[in-house]
Length: 180
Image (tube, rainbow, N blue to C red; front, side):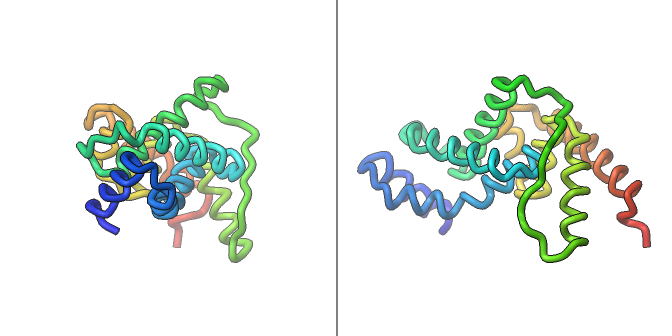
C-alpha cells in the first residue's frame, strides 16, 4: 500500500466513517507505532500497548483534520509523539527513568541480554534524544521527517541524534559490544 493507498483509506474513513478502511491503516502502522513506543518506554510492552491504542483512537477522532501535507505515517507519528509527550508530562517523567521492566520474547538468552542492554543504553538518553534516535534508527525516518514529527528544527534533531548515538555507542562498547 503506497501513499496514494493511504490517502484513499483516510478519505474513506473521514467521509464515510469506514471502519474497515481504518482497520487497514491500523494493521499497516500498528507495528511501527508499537516499536516507537517500545523504544520510548524502554521495553514496557503494557504501557506501549496503551500508548499505541491512545494514538490510534486520537488518529481516528482527528482523521478529518489530515490535510495530506505530509504522509499519513508522518502525521500518525506526530500524534504518537504528542501522546508520549502528554504521558511524560502527566506522569512528571523527566530525563531519568527508573524501574523499567522489559518484557517480550527473545529467541535466545543472548538475544534477551542484547535487548536488555539496548533498553539500558536507551535509558541513558534524554527523552528528546531517545525519540530522535528511535525515529531514525528503528523506524527509518529522515531528519526532515523527524523535525516535522517532533516540531524541532533540523539542526536540533541532528544535535539530538549525534549526542544520542554517541551515548549509545559508548554504553554498548563498555558492555562488550563492538569488540572482536
